Image (cartoon, rainbow, N blue to C red):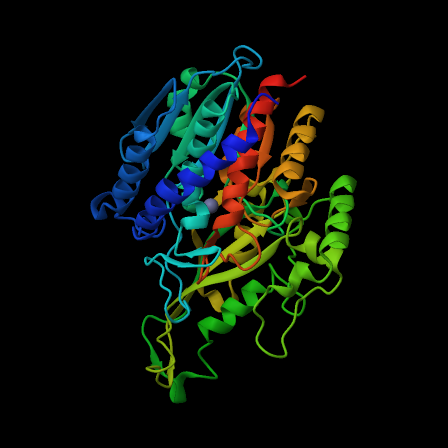
Amino acid sequence: MTIDMEKATALIAETWRDEVLPHLEAYIAIPALSPSFDPDWDRSGHIERAVDLVERWMRSRPVAGMTVFRQVLDGLTPLVVAEIAPFGPATGPVGSTTVLYGHLDKQPEMEGWRDGLAPWTPVREGDRLYGRGGADDGYAAFASLCAIEAVQRSGGSHGRLVVLIEASEESGSPDLPAHIGQLAERLGPVDLVICLDSGCATYDTLWLTTSLRGLVGGTLEVGIVTEGLHSGSASGVVPSSFRIVRALLDRVEQAETGRILLESATVDIPDHRIAEAEATAGLLGDRATEAVPYVPGAGPMVDDPVEALLARTWRPALSYTGIDGMPSTGTAGNVLRPRTALKLSLRIPPTADPAAVLAEMRTALEADPPYGADVSFSRTGTAPGWNAPDLAPWLRSALDEASRTQFDQGLQLYGEGGTIPFMGMLGEQFPEAQFVITGVLGPESNAHGPNEFLHVTYAEKLTRCLAQVLDAATRRG
Ligand SMILES: [Zn+2]
């Protein structure tokens, strides 16, 4: 290790306190919804404001050999890029590039924020900085540059780095392939990818994500009559569009158990991933599920801790995320409604083929509509999952050493249930690359839901780990 970690730790603490936190609070205040949730994003200007804030801050940092620019492509969300030349006495294999990835677009507000909290209002309480997008994934750009700066100012070394901060992740990264295509030459061969958009099972050690689920989504719509009818005269003869929706869903998901019935959405779980889940379950015990805010008397679908970990990382599961065609309960009359539409979000196993799942799901939902109803599955989208390649020995020991230095505990490996579409894309494009996928989405942090927070202490320690690993990567065997 050439980096003086004591010096780096002090620098990182100072930068987090004086620079990162104030800018992150300003970022939280911007409702920079991902294009899926703000189709008019270009005119509403929030993405632009978030991009401005992040780009301006990156430019302001005293990082040697850095060029920051914004890549703008017609009709797409912009990409913020920082290209940083190799630095220090040991710069690693010649011609290799490390990509550091993050995103600045956000999920929508969601209801249920507790009193005193709100999505676009940053609130600091102890270790927690509440507000939408701080943890998912606004901190990534700041933490990345903070770590690079600390490496340079503490006697450390790093190889050639390219920081990519995109603005379409929460929509499935539709804009990223075109950006990467445009950047391909500049990017060169990528042999290490660092992504800070994932999670941690606890806040007391470094967690590496070894797999991510994919995603298949769409809107199931059932129409049965052309206008609403008095339920007293029509019901019993005219079928309910909602009941038809229920019947169609039974083709995809077993109602009693939540088991997904699509063959293409079930895979054989690799043995080493099962072993990993066993190790994680042994370490976490009850902590694996106790952070879930069940209502009194309620509990999980799966009791066994190993099965629970596998269920949320390697098995498919369906969520119902939106509904149209129904008035709210306060204003609903006794009417047989003409149509019902449900937004479906199916998480699929890391190695399942999203296109095949979508095709099977569409056929299951649209075939042979009951009563000749008007059934469609439209506005669909897919994102690939990802299963990590075997961890290179040098990287495993660098991560483990960083974890021991910063947390006094060794590295832990586990699968995540979420999706980061870009990892699947990069895995295909750079099959030889190694991946460090980690993040701050730990217990209760609740990204996508209400009361999202960034665990500030953990994020700062993660920044220190990152600095240590960037330095260690220059001496890889
Ligand atoms: Zn994210």
